[in-house]
Image (cartoon, rainbow, N blue to C red; front, side, top):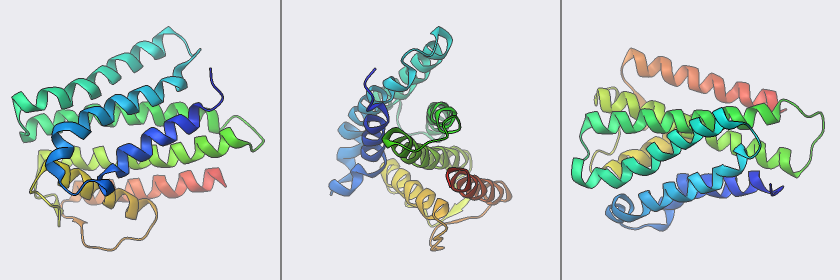
Length: 203
């Protein structure tokens, strides 16, 4: 397998999290960019599972199918809270699975090279993905559990959670979006601790 598998994954994660910067209209994101975005990300993550065994690849296939299929059927199903909660859970499982695969690589070596740096950056962005879909799962189960979320479009809601995940993991915490239920307050606390723990482990 190519030695640049972490760099490829890093490109996929960056485009998934931040492609909204290039889009003036979020309706375009929901209709066209999102499905293509997930195909690109699944393709970019395939290198992690080269030579890892049949069971891990079966799990990757099922999770990859779910995260590609769900954006394709949303047009016929609609953005109902139940559907979005199921989608968030599927995405959470997919990104957590990638994160633990990257983490297994990061804890092994006692040296630093390009792969370690790229894998560390991938782990950081995957942790943000885990944040995003954890928070989105709770939000679609109870829309009052966060204050300050843009509800005009599911894409706007997703972008708000990307923003919230980034300001939480970096400890910036502007306070314009806040958790309002005990579950989401505790979730944000756990996610903040995980972000700091990850940074400490890398150091």
